[in-house]
Structure formats: structure tokens, C-alpha cells
Amino acid sequence: MLTRAITCCTISAILALGSSPAFSSDDGFVHGISLLHDLKYPEGFKHFDYVNPEAPKGGTFVGYGTADIRNFGGDWSNEIEPAVGWERIYDRLIVRSADELAGYYGSLAEGILLSEDHKSLTFRLHRTAAFHDGVPVTSRDVKYSFEQAMATVDGTLFLDWIKSVTVLNDHEIRVDLVEPLTNSNLLLLSYAPRILPYHYWKDRPDPSKTTLEPPLGSGPYKFADFDKDYVNYERVDDYWGQSIPVNVGRNNFDVIRFEIYRDTTVTREAIKKGLLDFYIEPDIRHWVRSYDTPAAQQGLLLKEELYIRDSAGPQFTVVFNTRRELFADPLVREALALAFDFEWQNRALWYDSQVRAQSYFAASRFAATGLPNEAELKLLRPHADRIPSRVFTQPFQMPVSTGEGRNRAALSRALDLFHEAGWKLEGDRLMNTKGRIFEFEFLLPSPDQQRIVLPYVDTLRRLGISVHLRVVESAQWINLMQNFDYDVFLQGHSTSQPPIMMLPFYFHSTAAAKPLTYNKAGINDPVVDALITQAQQAVRLEDIITACRALDRVLLWSFYHVPLQQLEQPRLIYWDRFGRPEGERSAEHQQPVDFIDLWWHDKDRAARVEATLSAH
Image 1 (spheres, rainbow, N blue to C red):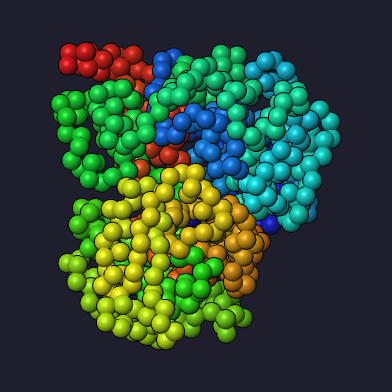
Image 2 (cartoon, rainbow, N blue to C red):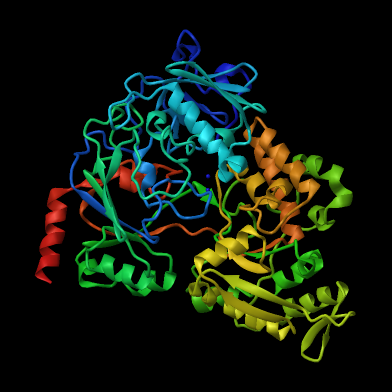
């Protein structure tokens, strides 16, 4: 939502201009910025290494979505999912390269200026930038876009580090910050805000509101047509930014179409019949067994696991709502965590394909391993009286079972912990001294999650716990989440790399009180808050790593969640209709959707596929 050393703290190094200050303009504006390493691409670079600059334009790419086309506003504040693909009609000020940890380059902005105190960023806009109606993009549009984004619920969470936005002239705008610039600020700027046309919205309703009127943008695509079951985007032939370095070799399809499928079984049949160009298979069972078709045997329907290092951590966690008295005791949470037999589920349900996440940043350099080193201890010792003692004495490790479904040692230890917390087995029920039965509700937004939850629920019932499963529809789910009205549920919990952008939204006490919080567990711990601040204020990569590892230890030993499998690599099913750039697979930090931007329509390959499909 992720090897290189940190540069020194001089302005020229932090702006990552390479070894020569000549890369900056006379007035200090630069083409790109990184706070963690030297930029890979120098001033005047032609294109990213992972694109084909000669990629032909043309053809149609057919993708899929899962939600009705109900919201072209592109805003999540009301938790109504935006129309799939909406982001393609907009430009951002900066973009993140796919083959660097934290390299950002001007997109709508042709120049970037960081102040000496790192508390303001000035952007110089391309003078040729224009919206799809031909009206130039100016600083007024950028200021309006920031103001609108900061006024939303999401903006209060993600953009509270912005102090003010000031128009300097038609093509220069300054963003003043509350604190010195961090890498997480840059990552957020590469996603938000989308730059909106002030002249279009000034006489219309709030752009954050749900709308079925396709809005005006300035990006490489525009809305063409839509219905409840599809949306089409057309490539803008005279797109102002098609020749700037960050866009060369990208946006190659004339039309990108998203079909809406509300059932995964139907979606799988659609990809096998050639109605879709690709599908990301979330279920290992189908990945193994469902695609051995004649087309696959002929090499026309292909399978590939993408190598994505942009995110890490648990794909899912079991979340305990610590706002509830029942889950306020860490002994109780640890006992509940011990009862989850991951190895049995991995063997019985997932073909032993999963790896248990033993960290909130699993499979990354930010994950805690072994015992804390001296740098971590320096951060942890001042809080020694407020954190679990095992942080200092034991490496964190979830129990490992035989996978045979008889994890007696873990269950025995869980009962001991319950007893220590004041709960005892009375007959076949777990009760406390007040006669209260240990009882809670496991909330599910989809019946599909029952496959993961039911074995866990059966184990908990063996411990005398009464668990009720409740599947709710989307509107009810949103209402329950907003009001913190839940006991336990499954939550996706991966974080971007480096993870510092997401730390306050997943773990900080201020997020626990917000109605659309990502801190679903209600973590409210001053030690966690302090370590998050350490991570965010660090100016060297090794200090960020140290702070994240220290934080990881405190969170893990507090058992706010039960981490399940590590984030899986996306499993891609696609038809061999496309050309692909040679450098695509070498982009270490490539994001999952980038292939739609990078690929192109190959007439010969497509003809071969169509001939085979027609024959059947």
C-alpha cells in the first residue's frame, strides 16, 4: 500500500542528483528526488529502462473489475469503490520509478525544488500540460486539488503533514510541510492528489462525492463509454505528456476495457474462453488445477508468477478489536493466536504453498529477526518498563505444528494463558470468575473467507470458546467498520516498501479513533507511537530499518493480530497476445498493475490466439 546506502544530508545529495551538481538548474529545480539513495536516472534521461521506447500504439486490452460502475469520482472517503481504472485519466505531480526503492521523477511537474530546511517543496509545472478540453493546467488547479484532497476523510489521514499550499505564479506552486520532508511524503505525493481542473469543478458538486458523470482529466486516457457491466478508456491521441521521459514506452493500448465480474468462478471461465486478456488468480487450488486447457498446452494461455517487491508483510491477519474488554488483555490475545494451526491449513488448503508471516514487514529488510541488535536496543531500552520483557530476551516465533491437526502443545499453552488471565474451563465452556462465557463474533464480508476461518473456529470451540460466524453485505460491513462495531475479522495487512508511509495509519493511537481507520485493532500505545515517530523522522535508511524492526518486536509480542501467510506474489494468467519489454522482469520494485502500461498489442501473436479460439 516496498540495499542501497544513504547519502549524506547535504541538499545536493538528498536530492539525489548523482555525482555532479550540474544536474540541477541554475535556480535549484531538479528533475527528480530521492531521500534514500542516488537517483538511477540522471537529468535528461530518455525513458525508464523497463519500457520499450519503440512500443507500437494500438489495440485493445481487456481487464476486469469486481464492483459496479458506481463512482467516477475516484474517492474512497465514503468507501464506495471508485470505477476500476479511474486513475488513468489523471496526472500526478511526480511518479515513482519501478526499478528503484525510492526514486521519484517529475510528471506533471517538470522541476522540483526542496528548501534548505526540507520543510517546503516547490513544483514547476510543464507549460504544455493541458486538460482533455485543451485548457492549460495551472498552479490554481494544483492548489484546488490539494484543498479538495485534504478536506476528505482520507486526506485527514494521509495528508495531515501538509501545512499550506501557495500559488507563486501560473506554473509554480509551493507546498509547505509541518515537519521536514520524509520518504513517506514523497510516496503519497506520487499517488495523491489527482490533479483536478478547477474550471470544470467550480460550478459542480464536491468532486469527492459519488458521481456517474465521467469527469475531466489531463492524463493519458479519458473515459469513452460505460454501462453497469463495463467501462472503456480511450488513449488520448494528443496527450500533452506522451513524450516526457516518464511516459515514453507506456500507455500503448488505444482502448483499455474493464469488464465487471461479481463471481470468481465466472471470471475464471471468462479468462479461459478468451473474453479477458488477464486474470490474477488468488486461489492456489485453481492455480494448480484449473488451467490445464488445450490453449495452455499450446502455449497460448500462459501462467506466470510476478516478482513484486513493492509490498511486504502478512497477506492477512486475524484482527482483535482491543476496544472490546474481552480482547484488552494481551494474555488472551496470545492464547487466541496460539490456537491458529497455520501448518495444518497450509497443508490441507494451500498445497503447502504458503509461508507464515513472522513479522509485520515479512520478506523485507525491515522485519525483525533474532534478538534486537545494539541500535534497536538503544530505541527500546527507554521503554523497557512498558513493553513485554520477551522483546529483549526471545526472538518472536509463532508456534509450528506438525500439520496433522493435533496441535496439543499449543492448545495446552493457550489454556494456561487463559487461566493466567482469569479464564478457566468449566465443563466444555471457558468462563471467568464472574461466570461470563468467553464468547465473540467473527465478522466476514464474504462467504469465501469461511474456508480460512472455519478450521480456526473449530479449534477455538475445542478450547470452550463460543464463536459465532456472521457474513454481512457490503453496506452493513462499512457501517460496522466505521463504528468499530466488531469483535474479530480478517484484514489485509501488507505495507509498501519502505513501510514508513503506512505506519501511523495501521498502528498509531491517533488512527485508532478515526471512523475509517486502518488501525482496526485499536492499538493505543505510547511506545508504538514513539517508535513510529523515530521511523518517520529518520534521515538514513539504516535508521529507518532499525526503528521498523524495534517497532515490529513491540507489535508482535503484544499480539494485536494473528499474522497468517506472507504476501503472495501475484499469479498471472494471460493470453499470448502482447509484446513485452525486455527490461520488464528486471524491475525489482515493479508494482502489480504496471504490465498494462508496459505491454503492447502484438498483431501476429493476437492473430494466432484468435485463430485458435475461433476454431473452438
